[in-house]
Amino acid sequence: MESVRKGFIFSLDAALALIVVIMVGGLLVMYFQVAEPKAGAYAASDRIAEDAAVVGFYLGKDAGQMGLSGTLPSDEFASCSVVYGYEIRVNSTWSSPIEKKYCKGM
Amino acid sequence: MDKRGQIFSLDFLISLIALTLALGLLIQFAEIKTYNENEELQWLELKGVAETAADLLVSNPDIVCELKDEGGSPLHSLMNCLPHINSLRISQQWMAISADYDCLIETPGAGQQLHPQSYDCKGDPTGSENVYSVDRKVVIFNGGNRYQISKGELEDCLKSDPNCKMYEQTVRLRVWKA
Amino acid sequence: MRKGIYSGVIALTALVLAVAIIATAGQRIAMQGDSIYGSSMMEVKMHWQNARYVLDKAASDAIADSVFGSGNCTYSTGAARTAVSTYFPQILNEMWEGECIVSAGPSLSGASGNITINATIKCGKDFGAESSVFYEKQVTFKKAVSSDSSGGSCLIDIEDMQSGVCEVDEILSGPNNLCSQ
Image (cartoon, rainbow over the protein chains, first blue to last red):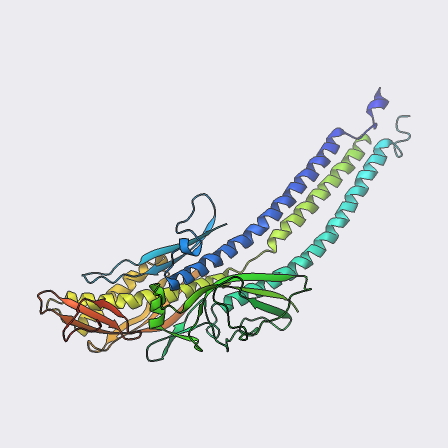
C-alpha cells in the first residue's frame, strides 16, 4: 500500500498550481494588451476635441455641428475642449465669458 | 526496497516533460519579447515623429495663416488654419520630420482642398511596412494668394456670414521610415 | 522525502514561468509613455488665442461701460483705463479656471477716436515644481468710441479699428454716428 502512494504520480496540487499560474499569466498578458491601446485613445480624443473647438469657433459652429457633444458624457470617458465667446453689453459691469464645450467620447 | 527505481519512475518522466515545456516556453517568451520590444520602439518613434509633425502642421506660425489688422500689420498666427495658396509653406523641415522619414499630406473627402502644387510631403507610402496616419481638422482660408487673413474677414466667419472665406477640411498626414 | 522532489520541481517551474510572464506583460505598458508636454503646449497656445479674442471684446465693453457710467455720457481716459484694468483679470479668471492671466498691463492711452490698449497675456500649466508649459505674448487693441446723449439717454458707438467692425452700434444717425451705414 505504501508503494502505491509513494511516487506513482506527482501530486495533484503541483499540477493544479502549474495550470493556475499559466491561466493567471495568460490573463495578465491579455489585460495589459487591452490597457495599452486605451492610453493612445485618450491622446487622440484630446486632439480631436481641440481641433473641433478651434474650427468650430472660427466657423461659428457648435459641438453638434462639428460631430461632437456639447456636454461631458456621464457614462464614459471623454475629452472636452472649451472655448469662450464674449457678449458686449453696455451697462455697469463685465459679462461672464460664454463657455462652449466640444466633447469627444472614446 | 521502495527507494529503488525512483529516478526512472513515471513521476520523473512527467516532471521532466513539464520542465522541458516550461523551458521551451521561457525561451520563446524571451525571443518574442526582444522582437516585440524592437518593433514597439520603432513604432513609438514613428508615432512620436508623426504626431509632433501633425501638431506643427496646425500650429507652426511659419505654416499656418496669419491674422492681420486693417492696416496690414500682423497680429498673431491662427492655429488650425491653412492658406490655400500655391506657395503653401508646408515642408518636412517645418514639421520637424527628419530626412530618414518620408511623408504624404492628403485632404480626404469633399470640401476645400489644399492647393495641389503647394506643399512638400508628397511621398508614396506604398510598399512601406509601417505607416502612421494622423487626421487633423483645420480650416482652409481661400483668400486669393494670401496667407494673411484680416480681422474683418475672420469676424465674418465667426458669425457664420456667407462672405466667410474659411472652409472646414480634414487634413491627413502619413509618415513612414524612408 | 523524495516523493516531494518532483512536486517541488513542478512548483519551481511554475514560479519561474509566473515571474517571466508578469515581467513581460508589465514591461509593455512601461514603454507606452505618450508625451503630455506636446499636447499641453498646443492647448495652452489655443487658450492664449481665445483669451486674446475675449479680451478684445472685453476692451470694447469696458470702454462703453466707462462712458455709460460716467454720469455725463463722455469718454475719459482715466475711467476707461480703470474699467479695462478691472475687467481683464476678472474675465480671464473665469476662463479655464484662471489658466491665463494678464502678466503686464493693461495700459490705455489716446483720445476717444484713437484708443490704444496694450497688455501681455500669459497662459500656462504647471506639471509640478520643476516643469511647466507657458505661452506669453503681448497684445494690442485699437478702438474708437463716440457717444450721444442729446436724446436723453446715453447712446454709444464703438468701432474696432483693427477690423473696421462696429462692436457697439447704438447711435444710428447724426454727427456722432461712428459706424452705421
